[in-house]
Amino acid sequence: MNTNRFIQEFALTIFAFFVFTVAFPVTANAHCDTMNGPVIKDARVALDKNDVTAVLKWVKKEHEDEIKTLFTKTIAVRKQSQQAKELADRLFFETLVRLHRAGEGAPYTGLKDEPVERIVQEADHSIETGNGDELFAALANSIQHQLHEKYERVVKAKATMNTGVEAGREYVDAYVQYVHFVEQLGMIGSAHGGEHKESNEDIH
Image 1 (cartoon, rainbow, N blue to C red):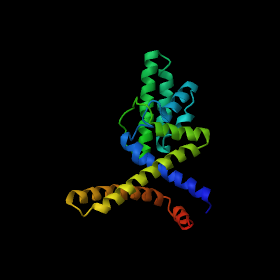
Image 2 (image 1 turned 45 degrees about the vertical axis):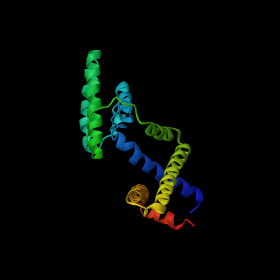
Image 3 (image 1 turned 90 degrees about the vertical axis):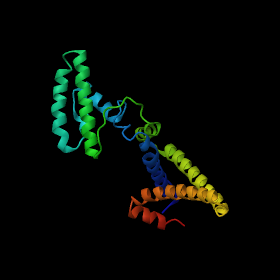
Image 4 (image 1 turned 45 degrees about the horizontal axis):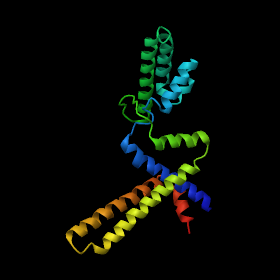
């Protein structure tokens, strides 16, 4: 396995770790549940163009007919007045996001007016531009810094852990944080199965 490929795969692993362990605990639904998220953006386009196609990708096949039916009703109602348009659009947005979340097996807790997390904006930007190198490098550097920081702390605490109970507790705390951090990285890496197994075997 060549070095460039390994670096790319490592960066992707770091990105997944960062998103799921840092961004998601803060605001688990912030991306697709926000008015500025990609689901609502496509919904606005669909309504403006009177073409439901743009939003169908966000729902499972079993929910497609429900969205199509509601879309037709929304188009008809929003012509009546500005107030009717706003109410109809809101209902359509909420239903679309609810069904999208259902397809993910996640609960729907309402639409949010919160800004999309910066890390998610950067992820979207990398997709739009077709270039994720800068994002991957920044995330890799961030995680590498955290690994070094946690490792150095646990090694330092280990040297004095038997000098007293509090020193021992300091070591245990550092040990747990370091090992759990590494474990989480390893779990994400193992999710790729044989591909990562092959990658590890090729690293010398």
